[in-house]
Image (cartoon, rainbow, N blue to C red; front, side, top):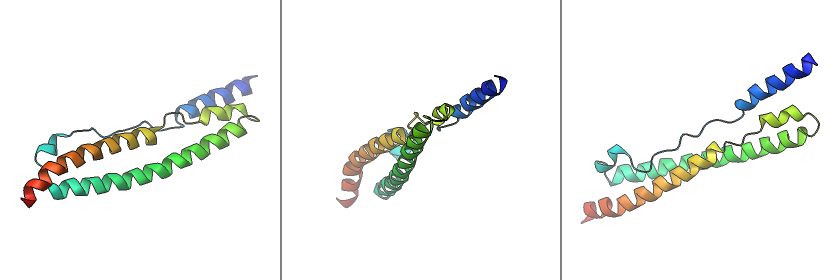
Length: 115
C-alpha cells in the first residue's frame, strides 16, 4: 500500500511538470513607435520561423499525449504525464496576432519610406 502511495505521489509531482507554461508575446510593444520597415519585416520573418517551431512542438505534444493516454489504460499514473497546457498553441496564436499588428504597422511605415 505504501509503494502505491509513493508511485501515485511521484506521478502527481511529475504530472505537474508534464507541460511548460506559455510565454506569449505582447501584441504591441514599447519599441513599436520607433521601428522601421526593415525591422518590422525582420520581426515578422522571425515570428514565422518561431511559429513553424511551435507547430513541431505541438505535434510532438499530441503524440506524447496519445502515448500516455493509451499506456495509461495499463499503467494509470501515466495519465498524470499528459500535457493539457497547450503552451505552443497559445504562443502561436499570440505570434499570429503580433504578425497581424506588424502588418498593419508596415502598411503605414513602409509606405512612408517609399514615398
